[in-house]
Image 1: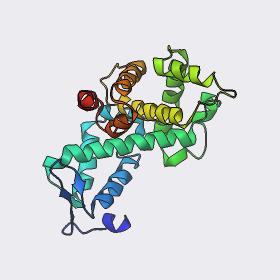
Image 2: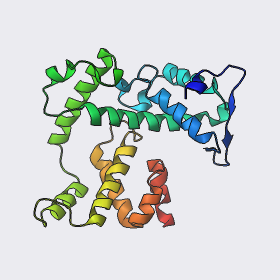
Image 3: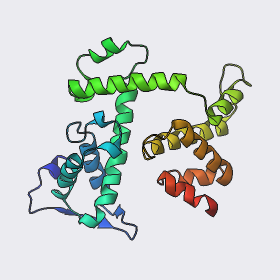
Image 4: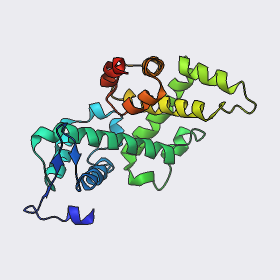
Length: 229
């Protein structure tokens, strides 16, 4: 990655794209890694925006300029590249929370942690802390979805609260991963329970194996594809 950042403006890497507009070939991993470094920058695309769809146009333009300064990519492919960047940004935000957040720590103590995790600025860290605490309160107060009720029912049938078998674990993880990934792509105001219910109905319709193949698609496209299986 260091060599890419040091490239001379006249020496850019040419990336190939397939008929679906997806990068492929030897440089695809290099491009993906570079996009990941931009997504995890914390300054260009700060996680304090909370929702990729609300990222300012100026910041998105700055991120795109960083890509085309190192890679020879036409504007035609910008949409897909920015989708890759959005996915990497969301994964990074999830990683930041998973490695830094403790629900048992009071907000005042949490905000005052030093050094601030992941090299974030104090302003960004305060926004994230307040957001995590507020969404935790909302989560604790909302009505459980059909999926969660089903999970509790399965666990109650085996001592120790463990799921019944590996297949149950696989399906539960599959649903959770899909809902977590696609919730931020839904229109503003969408409730988590709505995405849970859509995912649950689709799973019943197509089966776990087909659902696993479809889960990386945008959620609206995923729902549109459900009649093909």
